[in-house]
Image 1 (cartoon, rainbow, N blue to C red):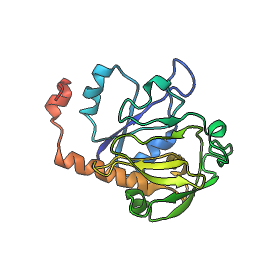
Image 2: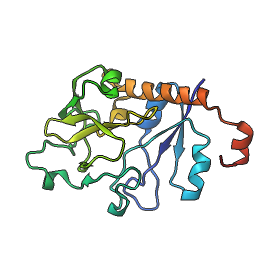
Image 3: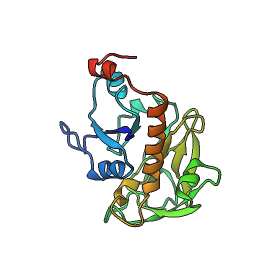
Amino acid sequence: MRPVVGITLGDGGRPGFHAMREDYVRSVEQAGAVPVVLPPVRAEDAAVLLDRLDGVLLSGGVDVDPVLFGQAAGGTLIQDIPSIVTGAVEHDAGGPRWRRVHRVDVSPASRLREILGQDTMLVNSFHHQAVDRLGEGLVVSARSEDGIVEGLEAPASRFVLSVQWHPESFWSRPDSFQPLFDAHAEACREEALACPRDPARAHAGARP
């Protein structure tokens, strides 16, 4: 079966607009899942949307209001790497989206290492913020050569994994990070089989 994966939208830096790169949709499709684009909705409507999905992919976006930091699992952010971290490598590089600009070292015992099969890799980079103090239940799975957190995961969960770079930008290239999306789709497929949705309930919009 093909799992249904929701992909969040950002505003693309343009107030009043929602936007997302095609790369996310194509990466999810190539993993054998059905992508569904999720616009920002009212908090009370989120459960209705989530009830129709087998998994969620959080896309990148612009900076969020600092008052929202840590609301999901706690933790803090480095709000601007260049002005706070001495000796940091370039994390907000220009050029083609698939240009690899710095090294990432992957933790040997991490799920990220299991999926990608590499201890070290070069990645693209388009961010100026980074994780500082970890949220509850999260562990670091990768760091850049300057010590900045580049990967997180939640070992106690079925599949909670994040990377700071943009693997979706490589979807049409032979040197892609497609195994990340394949692993996510497989976890979503397992979730769908273990906890099948009730079509009648989903159609009616009822909440669990």
